[in-house]
Image 1 (cartoon, helix red, strand yellow):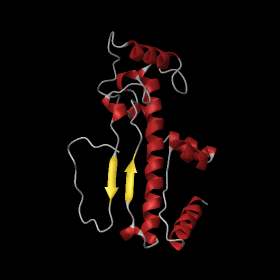
Image 2 (spheres, rainbow, N blue to C red):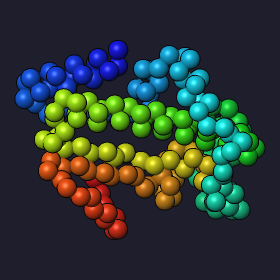
Image 3 (cartoon, rainbow, N blue to C red):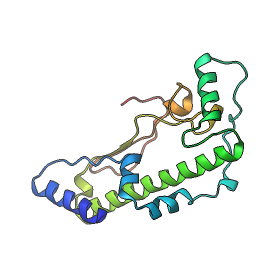
Length: 173
């Protein structure tokens, strides 16, 4: 039914000659999946094979905000305590599964654009509002302005674009 919904949106958007914004976010992905699909997604990556971030160790001392967040994650976590490296690997494995689902649904949208003949006249922008600490400094989410939380993807495909270009400096959106 998700493919039918997407195809319907693209059809009505093209019928009305209007631009169409498709916005995917994790809560939407979860709402589209059955409990069995969520369980499969959360088991997509083996936690035993997940490397911890190079900066996983929580720094000694540091800012009060960082220390309080790190202590909170150790005690309560985001969906359970994050007191051991194995608990962190489990969280990261589930997060990677969610990212893979977002990738899959982005692929579905891009395929629908190609199949509908709208690819060549559509601007596609892929970005995010924030990154995620995901274990760096034993933190989660965007609670501090470290590189992991501040860096986001920004990919743009323009009509008629023949080649990509990488911009080395910072960009803003």
